[in-house]
Figure 1 (cartoon, one colour):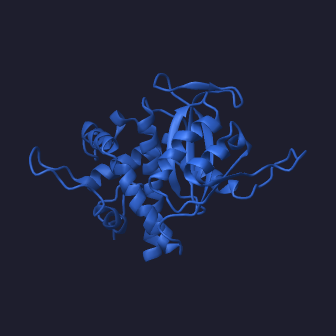
Figure 2: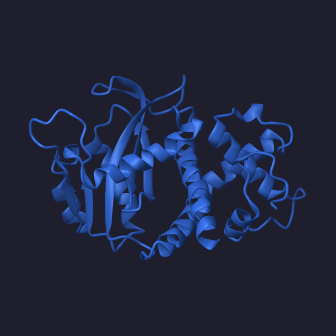
Figure 3: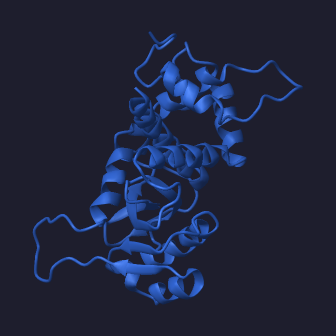
Length: 264
């Protein structure tokens, strides 16, 4: 039986063993270390419920302590590192190599709360807020994310995201996307810069009803996974880096659950 699970979002003992070895070491000096399992449970609770930092239940560590860990690990890239290690393990249990050769790119416009940086108006979706720009593998696992203003067109927002991928995914050969990614000579730039093929997946001409499009349904499913977490019902963060970190954290929790089931 799992010890100390007060909420359904709390890590099980098996999940904790999977992630414990990926955490940074405690500092040798300074204040006594806080229970990291309790801190992670608090952050997962925030992501799932959409709870405000100051509204954390009293059986978690103090909200300032929890936020301090979240912010420090955000600035040091710890969330991305944990996510990358778990993604490799998740791909392996699915019979895949650690890094992919194919990926899918898409964006999602989302309303923001008041204030915050990099907000804009998406005239197509009629939304004032930000865009979550993501690339996933064929399993729907996150490869990269960039959050920017909703006024930035997909073909323009893709540039920094694809540059981010190049450092880590040298085996990548093809990326699928919708018709927007065929504009502004983006496919030519991608092939000339990285050697990747950027292939657009088009809707059948004249078809107005809903249809499942090849490859693109995979990235849409990833957006639906993120939507299970109320913190992602809109973008509540003041900074885009916090928004990106919460996306990584949501995917970390999803992969921990998959890895736990695979090891049973």
